[in-house]
Length: 245
Length: 245
Image 1 (cartoon, rainbow over the protein chains, first blue to last red):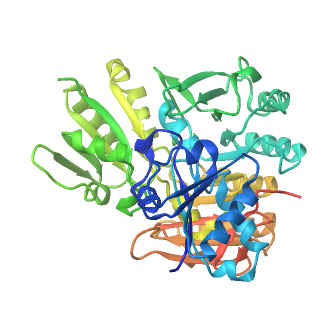
Image 2 (spheres, rainbow over the protein chains, first blue to last red):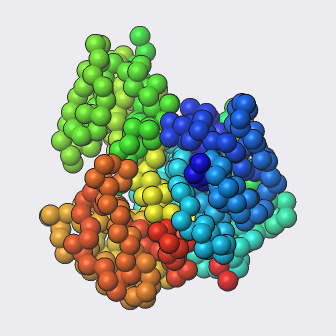
Image 3 (tube, helix red, strand yellow):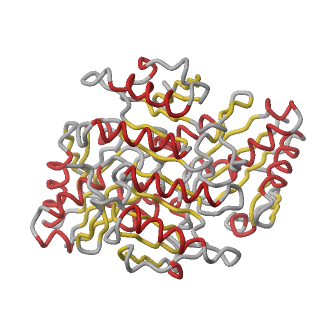
């Protein structure tokens, strides 16, 4: 029996945003690996073993998946959103790079999903309808100074921006600093949207100007989208025009 | 009967990447509007009118959809990839902004899809696994100088980059200029991937260094992904580590 690993994106929460490709992978799997709340989105069935793990153990989880695949198991690593955007795909390849050479020859596939910023953008209107960037605001894996530099350069470039992991209990103050930098680089009239629990029953959307934004509007379940100078509100929608004058 | 407009992302090509939400919208529609090849991906059925339009008439198409919805039709505007990323969602809100006030109260929804850069990233491995930006390299709707500026700032920020519309018959030389700028800002050893016809039977993937890249590697059916300084090849995969030292 030949094993495989597929890293699958479950989308932001609504099951109607899971692709058929991902559903098929799960239906063929022997083992599901992932962070607890994501594994719990998979329907249990006979012949399927669910392996729940805690947050922040991405490399252990990746190695576990690769070990099982090399033993002939069919393993789906579940990720929220898209696995390639601040999620499990990179962690899996890190484990491959630092693991036994044979892991490079395993049948490994990444199955894309609807990432949080694009689900949030769709709920808001089209705030990412022009050039944009995606920045993970957590400094767990990179220096905070680099994040500040990227915010400044993104502002100078006129990118709309999407922020993942904007704020957590362990680092409550950095997002306030990010807002200061954005006000300096983008001006205080630029629109900023806070999209919490996107596509879940608890979804909450809020759009204000950078002048009005306060750090408490974001937490770890929030995706933040900052517009460019042309981003505007039309009725209940936020959108960024395709055209720059 | 109350009409609506839903702007739906069909994903990059493989039907297994269409979400259930989009399939449901199409099944409830009376009218499908879109660029010819996207409309042809919708199965004809009784009671469903297919309106095919040419490329570069996005605003006309958006107005047509809004007019039909205000007459009570249930209209799906089909877009490839994700409608919010260099596609029809922004064009629709532009039409709303410049149209009759009543259009702002229409039932308008954007249904996200798998955008080309994330499908391409999944096929390659995880090249967008760290902070990244998405730039439309066409200067139809913005000055070329702004594109050059964004490329330079994105390089200085250390973003991985995804380029839509990198090169066309009507502007064959600009992509060569973009490669020059990237070599200056990112160095010649940075990896660049060309993903053509992603997830279609004709898919073709090519990864080289910026030193080796030539403009002819891209056309309008290609998504281009440029890594950051840490992006590497492990076996047949390209990935960008989550961590920056």
